[in-house]
Length: 371
Image (cartoon, rainbow, N blue to C red; front, side):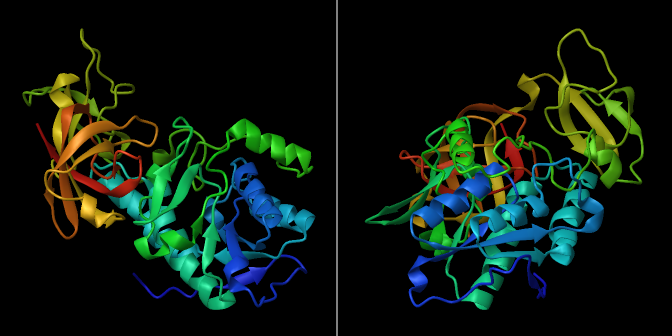
């Protein structure tokens, strides 16, 4: 990773002043949404000295139609009389998020830029930068997951409300940072968070939740971000040409809509061959697999990611966990076998595994799969 020079710029007059008790100083990553705003409020009420930090993404990616807004973050910090800083992440965001996003789709893979943003930007570059600038070791976000301190170490655990659980996006947190990571919303529902925001009269209480990428516009974001994509052959599972696809970057494994092909039984994208510029369709059974290998891994509980270990795995942020067993564990990869076939694992997406107490054992980027 390049040695990026990240500059912190204050947005208000409440400049950070070092305190004697560094154990009660914390940086809150603030997007301008209700979750991070309430996070800052709760921590202040608990006696923390809070500093708000907001990522300033490239100008070409900014939009006022998303849930992320630096102006709102600065305003909320002003209301709370908290120091607030912008950190310009243009260079690393372009390289580690945008360029990676484009490259993955061009390879026929399905990236997860939100997880990558947490891993590479928030948990590595920005955390290192604010620790160096302010001497603050603690960092908090408004994610719905839980940090649990046990006799065997600190654990990242699924949120109490599984429908809102966001631990999947946080698996890339370096293990050394776990004891200093704080998640105040772990035991709250979204409605409860909004109620708190209303009770303290902050202006983002009714702000809609954003479910889209912060750097893309409305509609098919791939149209705007990926150019030079060429049409090619649409194939059936036996390799026969059945139509024309509009470019491999417009498809993801398991996709059913927008295929430009009508069949008697439901068909899905089964394979994407970027080199041959072909997209293959198949039935649900033909694209379901048990054995899945992940690379670019981050392991939080190494002693539990061992061959033969029974865990549960999650292939999609909004999907359930399913029982599985570790069949191979290497230095930068692991392979698990699910008890039952899983529909359309997508190379480029994340595979996150949990133990029986729902702690994140580790995760990585899906690379390959077998039946």
